[in-house]
Amino acid sequence: MRRGLAIAVLLLAAHGSAFAQALQAVRQYREAHAAEIVTQFAELLSIPNIHSDLPNVRKNADYLVEQFGGRGIKMELLELPGVAPIVYGEIRVPGATRTLGIYVHYDGEPFGTAEWVSGGPFTPKLFTARHDEGGQAIAFPESGGKVDPEWRIYARSAGDDKAPLIALLTVLAAFRQGGVRPTSNIKFFFDGEEEGGSPNLGEFLRTYRGKVDDIDLWLFCDGPIHASRRPQVVFGVRGIASLEVTVYGANRPLHSGHYGNWAPVPGLALARLLASMKDDNGKVLIEEFYDSTTPIGEEERQALAKLPPIDEQLRRQLGLARTEMDNALLAERVLLPALTIHGFASGNVGEMARNIIPDTATAALGIRLVQGNNPEQMVNLVEAHIRNQGFHIVRDDPDQETRLRYEKIAKVVRHRAYPAARTPMSTPMAGEIIAAVNRVLDEPLLLVPTLGGTLPLYVFSEVLQQPFVILPIANHDNNQHAENENLRLANLWYGIDMFASVLTMPGE
Image 1 (spheres, rainbow, N blue to C red):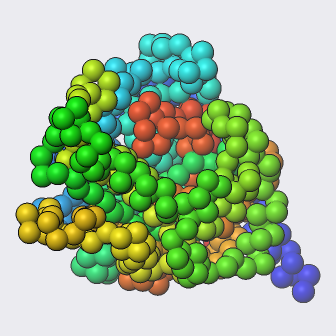
Image 2 (cartoon, rainbow, N blue to C red):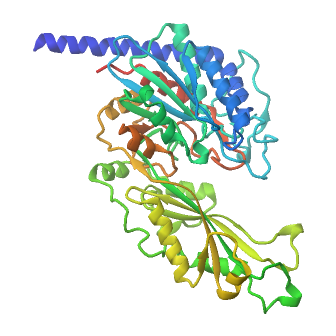
Image 3 (cartoon, rainbow, N blue to C red):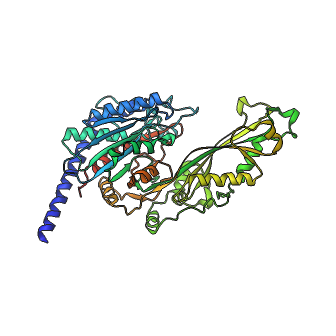
């Protein structure tokens, strides 16, 4: 017994030394190369990456192959015809007893027409702080120059999701320079279609299953840290279903003077339909909308109880006098399905407004799904509600005969949909990840059952039956998916430390 205990102590001490060596290597490297790290981040952010722009998305993939290859990693592009490739690479460690898969996506959201303070979504710019909190634009530092961790870099995908790629590149460069070796086999799996719903991910996993079949745990690097600025490990994500609803008036726009008070107004009809779906307090009124939700367990409830109170702070930060369901906690609300109006269009506003009654009105709706919700069935419930409001549902624009037959017509077009996914918090090896992340923190890591956003984790659960955890690094106020997306550099520094620790955590 004494001999076994002595061996265990020696192993722990050896790992403590290995971890200290790894952390020292990355921090020394970061201190010496901070300006270069930020400059490389800007270089990657300057490559357009809208998920539907395949030629530019491929430029991102080629850049990652070149940069990771330059760190001594064997990289390749996994291909399917006519779609963005998976950027794949691996590190084989002699004697390693586990294999970690690291998922990051390198594509980005469309950027709309809103103005960017940086001058454009792919024109990275450095600010001393948030631009709307007094931050000033500054030049990128010269090589060897000092970098303030409170600075923010503005560009599309700064927060979602290129930061983990730069953090990994930095760690690998530091390890190579400092002679540090990971303690696990590592497989990199970088997705170029995530913002488009990863429609081909399942086919990639089936086609190239032999490359990922031996992964013991997936690490998904996406999403923000907690709004308290404390890092978190997350064990699930919500799913998503999207649809568009169009209602119709006359078969052409009409002069509002000649036909107002006589012809139906599509915008008003659609507004009434949408208002019937949700009450003033935020409760969705669609029949059976909440019925399929799987309740969380006691372990998840205990984790929620330990989260710091941030709701009042968030309301002040966002300029909200109240939030839904009488100021119910955000952490609890993301455990229920949500119905959101993403956009509403009918005619024009501002200088382009005309004195007409538009012929159509369209709303884009999103349903965020939780464990237990079937995407198709949830959209079926929305359609049933639309029918109950007296609408005849069509899939294409109605012809004249249909217009004359039905007083109220709604065209419903279904878009991408996939279910929620969640890994039990007691998953073997999750505790090792938690311990590794805690090593680089000054206060305990937060454990969160479900992230509010969406990732295609269900594919990994269904195709591979492999567990996952989520390791976010972006700041909570990163303007994800909106204009002026940004990353606080302190969060990038945290990501570098976190990866250094996770890649050198003790073997089994």
